Length: 217
Image 1 (cartoon, rainbow, N blue to C red):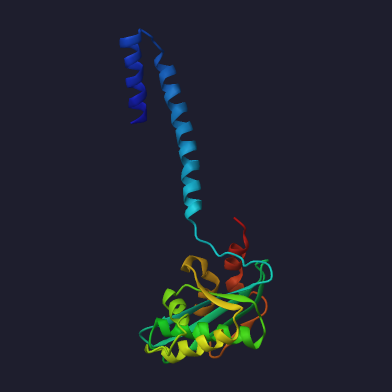
Image 2 (image 1 turned 120 degrees about the vertical axis):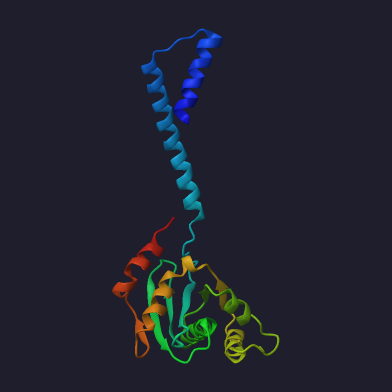
């Protein structure tokens, strides 16, 4: 299409302006402009794609970020939970993984992951902290503290809400799954475990995801 437009433009010059160019010059000009167009359009496309990339964001200085996730297999009602705690330098301080049995739903796995992370943060005095989950439902339900939660998993939510009321320097926020890959890998890994596991240095299956998160845009 672009070459046809160049030929049409040359035809109009000949008819209306009596200007003539060699065919080779027309072809060269067309190919040059086409190359320039592709370069500039490619750059614009890359900028647009980069702008839409959702990535993990490091916390502010002095604050820890705890990413959590739950995994659920509906056929077996088994799954796992995972959490990872990082500082403002993107350094992993600790990670946890735990197999889960007799789950009711994916939400059940997610809320157990949240509960485990909240208790770990409290028991090890790792505060102030933000707990990041890709489950919007968990984030919303855990924030309800005006009365008892009457949902199927309400007692678990009530337990988390009660703990959070006692430690106001810990809050739960929502993120997209794309920004929660390390916790996702831990939860998936937990499905194959027989008991809980904790990591104070990055295991090999987390190395690539941790390195990707640590890259500053």
